Length: 196
Ligand code: GAR
Image (cartoon, rainbow, N blue to C red):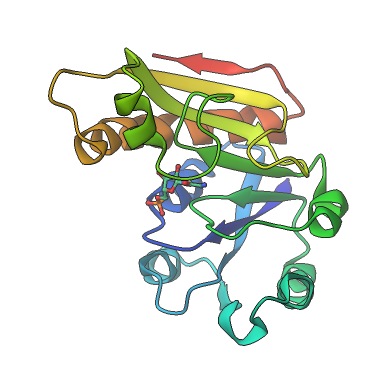
């Protein structure tokens, strides 16, 4: 059984989707949810699911990402995860941390990568006149939102869509895609999952 730690910064809806999927014959179980934001909504949701939680606030570390990540690493080592899932975790990780977890760390990103790495993905897709938007799950490498693709889900961009309405349509797809990718990944299957 693989042990999964989930890193969040916000409401944690992807974390809940992942956690709720890890039951029965699933090859993994959630062992820890860590937030870099004290009071993030996802912490209560994780506790309600019976998952141990931890907070590693990045603020006291200022610009010192390496020191923040050392504190994060310490929390993670206590839980001994095999796989790390970034689920709305809004801190950029340094090359050192990423290298330490390479091949064991996944991320979900709200765009059809390689398009729109970084922030404000839905607004950028609408502004570009794209016909489709979506989300991607990828392995995390030192290149921001640039690691090997493990799955993608597409939705149409509709006339009158705003970043908000589009996000509301993409998020349920994230909740389908990420668990499906994790199930396969935990079983050693890296074949990309394509949903639409
Ligand atoms: C999700 O849409 C996720 O794809 C995005 O943040 C949201 C978190 O929602 N992640 C990123 O933008 C990462 N750069 P959640 O906290 O409800 O899962």
